[in-house]
Amino acid sequence: MSEPAIPLLLLVDDEVQIRRLLRITLEGGGYRVAEAETGASGLTEAAALRPDLVILDLGLPDLPGPEVLRRLREWSQVPVLILSVRGGEGDKIGALDAGADDYLTKPFGGGELLARVRVMLRRQRAGEEPNAIAIGPIEIDLAARAVRKRGQLVKLTAKEYAFLRLLAVNRGKAITHRQILREIWGPKAEAQTHYLRVYMAHLRQKLEDDPNHPLYFTTESGIGYRLSDG
Image 1: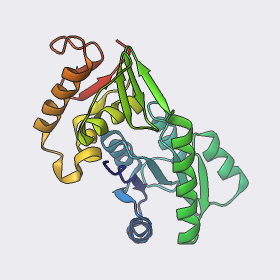
Image 2: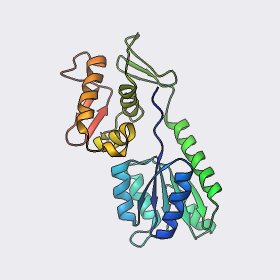
Image 3: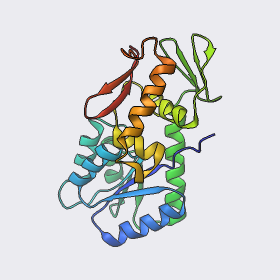
Image 4: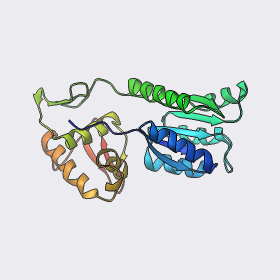
């Protein structure tokens, strides 16, 4: 059984010392961490990395925090935790109305930060990941880690299942090569796109009626793959 992917958190804050402190705290809590120091670079990193959660400072040098949130929410529902020295109710309401999921006022304790992160990630998993997913004749039982096609059990390797699961929980969305490789093989494998061709061929062979003309496992040219309803 493959282990679940370690959640990736994106820090968007222009203060180097704050980012360093946050990284130490979050990595100590068992998370992977990426960083950005401006709103624009934060949006770019969010699109490229598809993090599990974004920690966003409101006082960025280039874009107001609510504007970063607005742009992010145009294409992503990733959980966002706001960090700010502005502790007024109006600031908090404004950030939450703009699409934030939670708010912490600086200074804050590392324990409280980790607790907020755990709650947000748990809420996201409970709200977005059903126990089972059906796509055409394919049934994916996420709770039992079992896959069936027209009622017949299909045997998958751990990596094949991890690949299928990632596509399934993001059904209908194009998942980039980089994201798939990071999630399943780790950050050092980002250049190994041949892995994806091999494992996608395996999935199509086992789950498509006509592997040479796939109906469900589609290729987004130059981008990645998508699992669709056909």
